[in-house]
Length: 427
Image (cartoon, rainbow, N blue to C red; front, side):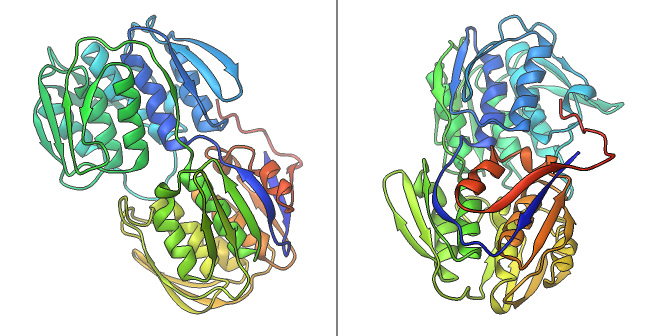
């Protein structure tokens, strides 16, 4: 295993190029199963979650060709067995998108319950409700989800809560159903719009993605397509928060500023200076970080995937800040690690009270999940002294070349092997 060693106190300066969106990639790659021809996907991030989903398709029989580091050709026409065992999916939550894609293509799917980040209950009841509305039956036994239908028929589906995963999964199944499917109370995240655009480029008929009502008119055939994934707004937000934490000045390139509106608004509120361009954002920080209140909400609200990073940032403010997690349960597990660095945070359910002390100190810590790991990096960059972060495989699930990108901004960070440890195999 490996760890990051970070010596804090250096202001980040320079430019950073943002990679393709993780959350879009792990939905779009399974969607290639629905195609009757090869697909070329561009701007794919080089991260372990994407490598895993590609590996799953390969092991199922897909032909995969890497054109370059960020472009891949996938031909799924040779996939004939819609079964995905636990060994393939145990490390990633987004593998459940295989359910919708396989159901849409074969009217049958058997997929093991997935793994991934563990920070609270992530039920799939809304996914199954959507599949059932399309005419599918399902069973869950021995850790496997079995969904099957004689035919899929378009239907009106209302989600009891806003759910990104179920919105995506039902879109994937409904695109090959007969007739019109209407999803109400749909999630509106940018990667849902990106998935809809990809499916439409293959010949699907999807309207309303990005609103709370999505209409999908099923088609019998989807052709291969070439498509470029949107930039990752969470990766961008993470570097922006790091610039603020270190009182730096960076240009974040290859972004869609509109996707970052809730993040830029919050950073401005705590004192950052933001300048937007067509496809880049400049972030600088010259004064003290201001206390603030944050509540995560579904898009276009403040994203839950930025909550740990901003909480780390608020430990550096003077005064009391309130952070409310409005999406997931138990997403404050990283707080104990920040406390090791001197943070004063108390948690009650979905609310964290951050008593900013204005400084942190380096300490040995462990990443508990992907975004928690990003929060620890931000804290370490701003802390006095040296921080060692273990379990960094969590971080590398979602951030491409983060060590290299931070070093290019001036950070004192290196990755070293932990003596006597065994290498954790992601694939």
